[in-house]
Length: 76
Image (cartoon, rainbow, N blue to C red; front, top):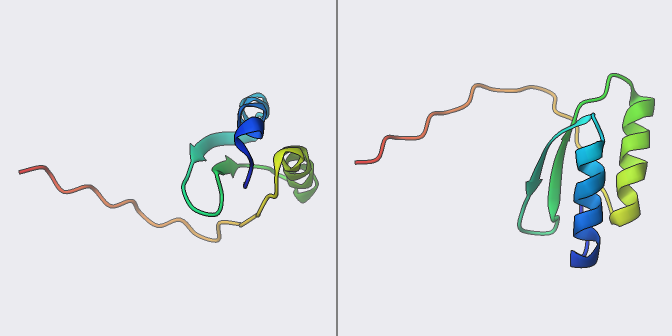
């Protein structure tokens, strides 16, 4: 999601109250926030996206597959 500083707090508050939003990351670059949203139906995903879009443009991507995480190398 791309938003402004004025809309950041309300967007985070809505995400915290939305059960389908399981994690939130503040990121750099074009977008400001990355939400991990889990919905069982496309209609509910549409509702969640529409509610968050009040605070700025939303880009939606679907995860097709998850790969094992890599471990970080141990510090010397």
